[in-house]
Image 1 (cartoon, rainbow, N blue to C red):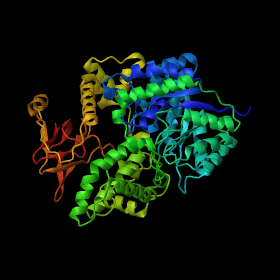
Image 2: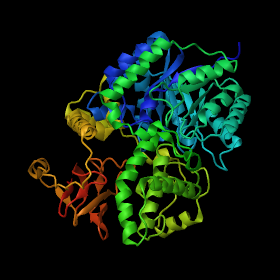
Image 3: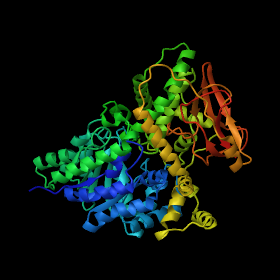
Image 4: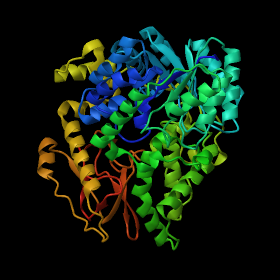
Amino acid sequence: MGREIKFSLVYRDMWQSSGKYQPRVDQLTRIAPVIIDMGCFARVETNGGAFEQVNLMYGENPNKAVREWTAPFNEVGIQTHMLERGLNGLRMNPVPKDVRQLMFKVKCAQGTNISRSFDGLNDARNLELSVKYAKEAGMISQTALCITHSPIHTVDYYVNFADKLVDFGADEFCLKDMAGVGRPAFLGKLTKALKDRHPNIPIEYHGHTGPGFSVASMLEVARAGADYLDAAIEPLSWGMIHPDIITLQAMLKDAGFSVPEVNMKAYMEARALTQEFMDDFLGYFIDPSNKLMNSLLIGCGLPGGMMGSMMADLRGMHSAINMALRNNGKAEVSLNDLVIQLFDEVAYIWPKLGYPPLVTPFSQYTKNIALMNIFSMAQGQPRFSNIDKDSWNMILGKAGQLPGKLDDEIMELAKSKNLEFYTGNPQDEYPDALDSFRKEMDENGWEYGQDDEELFELAMHDRQYRDYKSGLAKERFNAELEKEKEKANAPIISVRPVVEVPNFDVEKVTEKYPNAQPVQTPVSGQVIWQIDLADASTAPVVGTPVKEGDIICFIQAYYGIEEVKALKSGKIVQIETKQGDKVQKNQILAFID
């Protein structure tokens, strides 16, 4: 019998790589015993990433979900693991140091055993505190090497990075092949090099199946000494997700490895339950294209987990890009053509941006720049005419050091805008903040919760937590679900629909915010939001600060683009339109207070 290989079920990431939402806690607790009965998983990925945010968006308590979901696995000795984003914690933007420290204490107390920590730029500085705080809290610290394929991402590059993580005290390595573009032979060499250098540190491989390499990659890393492989189960495997456990178990067993048997009765029950969850409501938010593999991802290196939001972006911008092309006497493009253009544009600009590994949030930033380049060129403007603030922060080093050198064109552009590059430790820019959140909870009469878990949720996801507490989140989700159900059941319409101007309750908004200023469109056309471009399905979030004169959004009119600017400084308190919505002249887009 050969060397033992253990499996981890990435049940959280299966859903995140498929669509917008995760199962509810009642669904998770139903399937947990069935996963245990499958008998083949030493680990289950239970939370982290966007898991807590999704629960808040339902209007439900994420702390209850984590505790009840992890408990059955804890009872039988199956390890649970979470995903956290280093400097960004469980969100898309940097987190103060004291909030990061509290996160590990809370998650360990809730029953999460392992913290998989990654930094999207492979900047070790952003992971030092993750290792420190995870171990202090009593968790296993598993640090991730974000895998990509470029001239600078060599075996030596990753081994040197891993050495720094070991110096911090990391317990394990994860080869996080988030786009599945790691070449199998390369991954085998990297695994062997890591094992030769650090023989006592376990290695877990995580690979998406999008471009089709991952099964071969798993065999290579197993032969080179990997200890754990991440797997999925039908109907949420393959496509942009992960290989199915049945295939991996059979492949490794045939190759002579010692692998656990799969209880097929339990597998089929887990499969059926997962399909039931999709049929219940989760399937309304899953893009069908995420069930397909796509070899075009080999060239651009975009991760499968963001394909859903990317397609939403493209659909939202498609008509605006075509209108700009028409206005400039150029041929229109189909949505498929636009997908290929975006992939090609990402491949073109990626080296110019210093080869950031394309993982959250840097995959979104790179995609945003590429999409706005396509839009700018359709208008007859040069590339890099419109770069959003978060993307500039990546370029300027405020999120960490880029792996490669910025192109001279980008350097000159930053210089022309009088932008300064940052070389310090990114964490230093974000001072402790828990006291301010304690004050807010005290003023509202909110309980800190068991192990300060409610305090943590407010500090990590402040906007979503406030909406959860007010009931707005549940109201918004229920309305969104009803809309998706109506779309799914709607007949196919072959004529152009009439654009109706929504009847907004202005009095209700101004009663709550007496000084609120409406943001109105000066012309009829299509909304292109400037803020929160990373998710084209939504407008800017409530609470976004703006200054007088800031460009809030653009309106794609029949003759070109019109800017919509803030008439006062404040914050957005109400949003009335989504990315890509058709609007009429003087229609209210949002309110600023």
